[in-house]
Length: 123
Image (cartoon, rainbow, N blue to C red; front, side, top):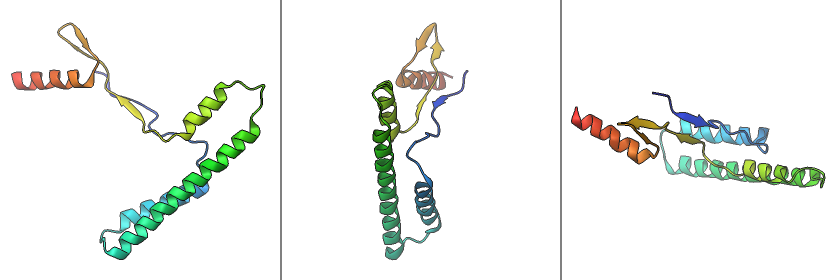
């Protein structure tokens, strides 16, 4: 049986820069090392998370401005849609490969799960 197919496990973003990386690292480290959640730690964590969001928004705005300045009517319009898609934060899409059962091809995840349950219960 083939393994799960995961596309875009790590999404490359044109707007991601060094300041985004530093803000993310600070937020991640603070979240990781604050085992004791007293009110002071919680406030610091929320401030760091808000700062991370501001840095990301600022990076996206700067990237958008640079992109608008570089627009040229001779370039294909598909570049605009590709850039807009790269600006959106979407999770990676993972799909379970099709399952073949009793001569049928099961594509939907719930069908695959039900078939798996039937196999487990019938054994």
